[in-house]
Length: 342
Image (cartoon, rainbow, N blue to C red):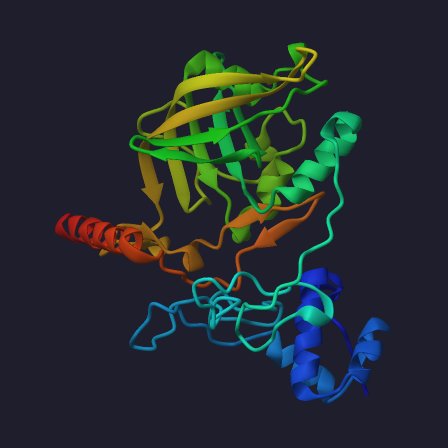
C-alpha cells in the first residue's frame, strides 16, 4: 500500500527533516520512494505521525500543561520545538555544519566546516534581479497590514513586508511602500493617506486571515469589501481597525524617509509611526505578564517569491551573563506591573 507524500515535503527544509526522520527509523530506501511521491506503509504512517505532532508544550511550562497549539493533520511541525537546534552547545563551540554529510546530529555544535559562498556585486544586477534576491535572502519578514483613510473618507487596506519594530519608547513601527507604476506620481494610496492624515492602524497578520489579507494586495476601490475583512472604528485615529486581527495598533506618523536609487529616482519610502493605542485579543494576551502569546497569535511572515511562512518549531535561548540577568529582571518587573493593573 502506498501513501501520498504531503506536498510540503518538497520544501528543502522539510526534505532535511524527512531525511532525519527516515534515518532515525532506519530505512534509506524510503527516500527514493519519497522522491517518487509515495512512501510504503507502515513507514509512510510513521513519517506522517512524526510530522503531525498532536500535543505541544512551551519550554516555559514547568507544570507540563500544554499551552502551545494542538497539532492536527496539516500541522506538519509543532509550535514548540523540544530544544534549540544545538542543545549541546558550549561557549566557543561555534556552529554545526548545516548541509550534507557534515551535519552534526549529536546535539553539539563543533566541527563546522567553512561554507562555500557565491559573491554577488549588487551594482551589476538589474533592478528585478536585486528585488528577487533581496526578498528571498532577507527572511522571514513580518507583515504590516496597514489601514489608512483618505481626506475624502475612503478607507484603504494593504500589506507590507518591508516592515518591522524600530523602537520601544515610544513604541515605533516602520513599513516601506514601494513606488507603484500604477499610481499617480508612483505614490501608493497608503503612503499618500498616511502623509496627509498622519494616521494609520497597523495589524499583525495571523494565519486565520492571511488569505484575506493577501487579497488586499489587489487594486480595489474597497479592499475591506473585496477581501471580506471587517472594518471597525478606531478610538484615537480615523482609519478603521480590522476586526479579525488579534493585534490592532493605532498609530500616529513620526516621520518619513525617502529611499531613492543612485540615480535619484524614488524607489520606496520608509514610514515611521508611533503606536498610540493597542488592542489585543483576550485569547492571545497574557494579562499576568503583559505579553502577547505568540503560539496563540500564530503570526505569518513573508519569504521569497509568493511564499509565506507559519511560525513553528520555536525555542527559547536565554542571553548570556549579566545581559541575560538584567533582561530577566526587567521581564519580571514588567510582569509585576501588568499584574498590578489587573
